[in-house]
Structure formats: structure tokens, C-alpha cells
Image 1 (cartoon, rainbow, N blue to C red):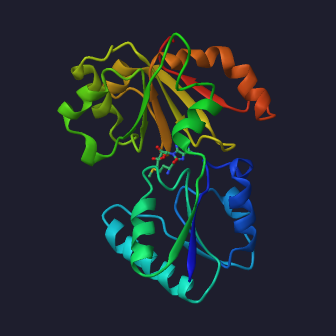
Image 2: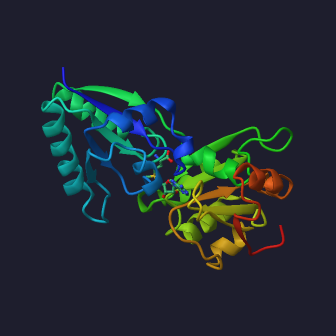
Length: 258
Ligand SMILES: C[S@@+](CC[C@H](N)C(=O)[O-])C[C@H]1O[C@@H](n2cnc3c(N)ncnc32)[C@H](O)[C@@H]1O
């Protein structure tokens, strides 16, 4: 039975690929990859393989998704080693389950190779734990895109200690305003980690109120973290820098005094 490997590429650093993902990439005949898969991760793959970029363009998501399905079916039917490579973990805001189900409906087997999700790894690598004894015992991972911006929806996150919002850069001011309106503390510390787990990582810290006022400049892709755990970064920064082997490599931008 033809097969497709649905593989998580992790947040960017090839050292954060799973062993299984690494081994499969080295023997891949076809790699169909998303926009957030880093060049460094692609560099691990079989150089003689066929690389197909499948990044989505605003307004053309469905057309591109159809093309992805077409490529998957065609190459799998040829009995090639086909890897569908997605940033982070394929099952976290990655349409992984949809593609898996589509392939099964067309008689193609799928083997999932989970990846390290940016939702947890990117904050952690910048010195922000999503849970912390005595500070945060719960966290939620939320989509910050337009479809999820109804103000009343945000009140359900009031009781969660740490909020991790993906795809939030464009709507960050509205998200912060909604959270404040729902009752979250306007002085709550926040961080944006741009291009986490890459050499171009940049961390911006601020408060919910400043983000709501549109005063915090951030570029996509970034993970938006909201909660008291952001303060922990001050105590872990040295270790974080040591861990990436380049003290001072992480650029810092602080908007508020936290
Ligand atoms: C469509 S979601 C996919 C998430 C992915 N499946 C995962 O598990 O990380 C894309 C969002 O993930 C976040 N993201 C992914 N990789 C990132 C990275 N290296 N640095 C910062 N944010 C990242 C950004 O919020 C981006 O808008």
C-alpha cells in the first residue's frame, strides 16, 4: 500500500528534529514542505530528492491545499518515499489530520512522525516556561487568526494561567484588547518570540496594555505568550544563551519595565 510520512519539522533548528524525522529526510524522494520549515531543516534532506514548496498564500489556501493533495496522491502512487513536512508538530494548527484523512480516503497509508511544537519549545528556548510551580499550573494554546477574534470567545481563557497564541502577530492589538475587556490584568507581562529556535530569534517583552494600544512592533512568525511566567525569563536568560552556545546571541527588545 502506498504511504506518506506526515512529519513534524520542529521550530527551525535541525537539532530539534526527532531521530525518525532526520532519518526519513535523508532517504526522501519527495519533500512537500510548508512556509515555516526552515532552510536549515531542508538542508538535512536528501539533496537528490524533489522539493515542493507548499506555503499558503492569503486568500488562496484552498487552491493550494488542492495542489498539495494532488502532489501527495501522484507521488505516493509512484511508490516514492514521500514526506509531507510541516513546521512544528503537524497536528497543531497544521491541517495534519485533514491531510491524513484525505490520504486514507484515497487508499494511502499515513505514518505520523510528531514534531516539537513551537507553542512549547519557542517560549522555553527563550527562557519562558509555560508552567511554573507556584505561578502557573495551566496553559492554553490558541489560534490568533481572524476567524478566532470574536470578543466574547476570549472570556473562556480568563482562568488559564499562561496563554500561548500562535498566528497572532497581525491581530495582536485586538487580541490583547479582547483579553483586557474579558477581565485579564492589563499590566500582565507578555512576550513575543520572533523566529524562535533560529539564529534570527528576537524576543520582545511588554505588557498586555501596551500591545492593546498598538505600541509593540513585532514581525511574523512569532509566538505570543501572556502570563506571569514571562518574568521568569530574567532568571533563565544566561542558561538559555549558554545552551545555544552563543552568549548574547538572542536579541532583546523590552517595551515595558518587566
Ligand atoms: C500555522 S501555525 C503552525 C504551528 C506548528 N504546527 C507548530 O506546532 O509549531 C504557525 C504559527 O506557529 C508559530 N511559529 C511556528 N514556528 C515558529 C518559530 N520558529 N518562531 C516563532 N513562531 C513560530 C507562529 O505563531 C506561526 O504563526
